Amino acid sequence: MKPAFKKVIRIITGFAILILLQFISEKIIHIIGINFPPTILGMIIFALLLNFKIIPIWLVKDICTIAISILPALFVPLFVGVTVYYSIIKQDLISILAVIILTTFITMVFTAFFVDKVMEWTGKKNV
Image (cartoon, rainbow, N blue to C red):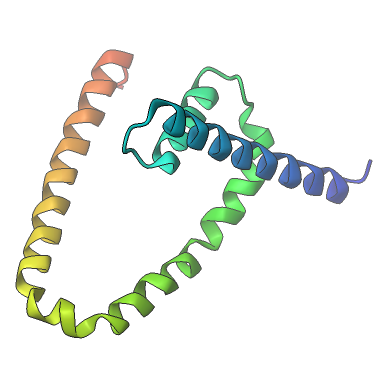
């Protein structure tokens, strides 16, 4: 098989895996009946499957690279929504900005703490 054809097959297979994981996570959320974003559950399942080498990284690497490259285009609807609802947002702009800054700081602190603990647990902190 030609390398280009193999890459296309890997992209299609990787896309099918991601769609299947999204479908499974939506069904799990529906069955359990909790209010939780299925995309987050899908990413958790995906990370676990990669971590335990149930899904090999080479199988999804190409589709993930493509998804990351088009990620900025996915924010366009967000910016359009901001312009449509600007008058509503303008009323509480200071509060919104304060919440964004505060939650960003809190997220950074918790992420640093979590990464530090994971590095301790894996023994890679003193490398």
